[in-house]
Image (cartoon, rainbow, N blue to C red; front, side):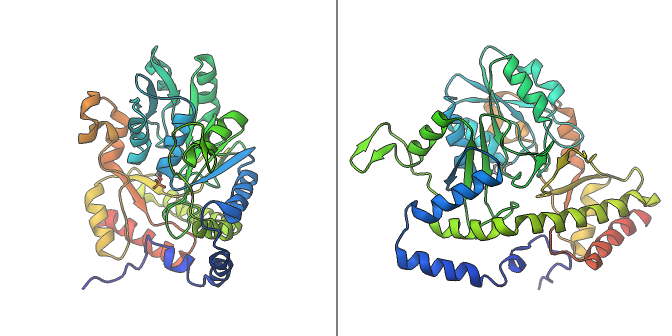
Length: 374
Ligand SMILES: *Cc1c(COP(=O)(O)O)cnc(C)c1O
């Protein structure tokens, strides 16, 4: 029989332990039959636009489709190259492939973000866009990326799927480029008892195109102006999103306090010097900490040790995108991106959410340090 983790990765049972206010609003929704777009979806779009300080936000069905919609809106398609990091979740590259474009991978830096010093050398005549990721809820240097994009007339779609609540220089993730894409999947900072997503933009034309395409290309019930798809968010999820958006800053503050407690334990520990390496934390970057990642020596043994001792440690991810079987046609090989490849062998993601107590964090720390002390 498996014993529940003493330090669990999963925070959902606590997050939704008392959803009475959500149930009450679902009741109004259910009696209203407002089940396709409608007033709850419109309301969360307004709230999300405010939250991200964007002119426009559209509520969509998930983060992957948010990326696809964004790329299509910028007319990225067959024959185009899109520069993207080689260490994201599969959906970032999946979206590029889905619109018929070719992903061009870029190595990453010691914060696990796209290495902005290596982007320029990847630009060719075919490059149409840069698709940086706010990986783990931290940000790459978006100022440099936007500057490069301007110099070469490229578009920027931001994968801010893990970046809801992330800010760089005080500016919300997802709002540096032409379109930002966000996910409301259960493992993201804002999550909705299922799937959901958003796209944001400040460009009215792009907004109108995405708004139309998201809903079959309909201008009204009897007319379509193009052949689109159905990327609509479900109103049930829109209700959850509204309630959870109101709690998000509280969650993030608790997470950030937990991170700084655990960081300081690691940094003060002589046994862990050279064994555990934390990424540098930029003061200018308020992170959402969707993933609390670090580099560990003897990683696989550490993970087994932690998991056997009640700590739900994981890896994001053991195989970088360019070395996945799915990337075969793009012609990459071992050694192409040495930084990401080295990290893939050493990365550990520890549970780090808003419900962890000091006692749980201290226990996790003592399990990590006892592994290296023995
Ligand atoms: C979760 C995630 C996605 C995909 O979002 P879904 O809502 O699961 O489709 C894309 N990119 C990144 C970086 C993600 O973390």
